[in-house]
Length: 172
Image (cartoon, rainbow, N blue to C red; front, side, top):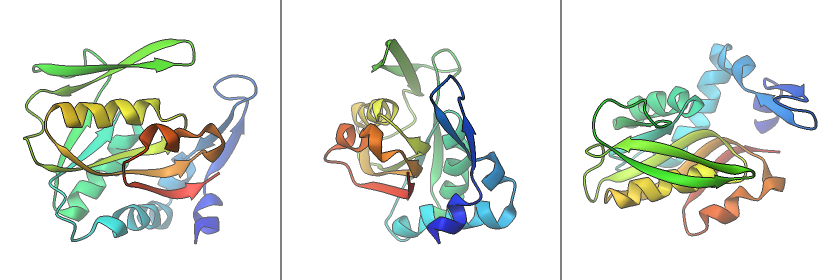
């Protein structure tokens, strides 16, 4: 079944810069059966697990996160780039290969003890995912798991999430 999903993902060489092979999920998302199958695979491990909130990471994590929240009977919380959320936020800054970036979440988005599933489309180096895990924990949430459609195994992002339950549907 993984090969079927992989066949629906377009590979774009040299994007966003030379030497990078970009896995374009828009070709999977535009096919109802592909999108449904990806959601089925992402949701299955968490059905009946008492997930209170699904946290989706800007921006493709919103696509999967909202749909998964609906399927799991959970609420949805967006994590965004700085300055995009209207109420009081908590910020987490994290290192990039060259420089830093940051993410924010509303301060009142997660109540202490709520069971949270973090969702994004891609696990690469793990920096973004680690920042989101740290944000959820700072607000008192319990990270049940971190789920991705795609893992780029050679980039070893899994190591940055050591100690967290990790679900990756496709691995390259």
